[in-house]
Length: 312
Image 1: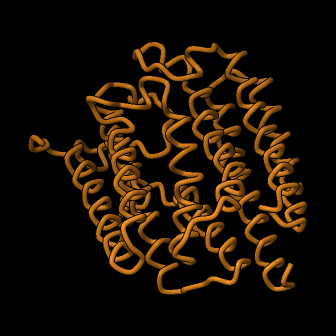
Image 2: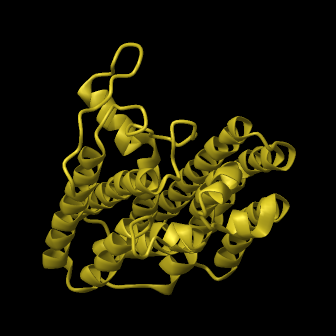
């Protein structure tokens, strides 16, 4: 990477270094990695398996990989011109002159290195399946926006997020606890996969016009605004439909019905995207998507822990 030039000075008071890096890492978004890890742990607890030390390694490792993905995503979106000073991205530390581009890239590599190091400890403790999950996960995180692959630029973003922020993390976390795989964990991970993919899709609905200008092909730009809105509806419906299917299959306990408490959040999210087109208004729909994923995830974690406590 080329050396960065001096960081331009913006107007107003400059945040402290810690605040800037918290903004760059998008700390609040790391729940997208933490929730599936904790769900995998809760599923394993219901099956009688729990290892606190390995849980911490998996949790911190997954969040580090997510942080690395965030930073690398910001760097390559800046490099491609997809994010400019007028964009509504969640970080924008490069565009606002808070960090030099190379600082962001190097921060991403450091975060990936931390995640990979913790993953190797888990490989030592748990065996090669963690390596089989970990290597593709790191690669997907880096090449999400990095050339020459740039998955997010060829309409593969939602599929990538669904697979690696849903089933891969949940099933991987289960394996870290139980040292074996189960179809039940896979079935229980699918609804969360739809909801985390919905976060990205809500982001792409907001950015549909700017992405078209910069040649970024997403499912939203391909389907058009109306089609993209209905795809988000389909993702939410599929999340709850697969929850019911997983319950009927015995993969989710009936205490999982408490996840229905998150439905109003989904309804609110969908009302926004169906009635608004301004990017600033659609930012609220993106926030609702993040909240929906977190609420559903926490409720489902609680459902499994209650079932574990009651021996259901």
